[in-house]
Length: 91
Picture 1 (cartoon, rainbow, N blue to C red):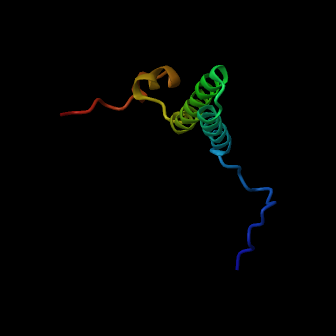
Picture 2: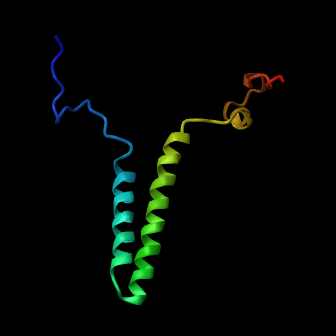
């Protein structure tokens, strides 16, 4: 029987979505505060900052998905050998 994993397990990897989640939550909070605060200068600033943080969280998640993928067009530059490229797709 396997030992149960505890919360403080040293072999446990942290989630790659932790930082984007915090950034997105801060963006949503600023966006909501921007609509609730009636001060004309601050509400526009908070709405824009919240929107920018939400976009930053979305793009950082997308970059983590696409980070390990190398397009075949750039594969020759990465590997250096022309023979390593896969054949072109046939219709």
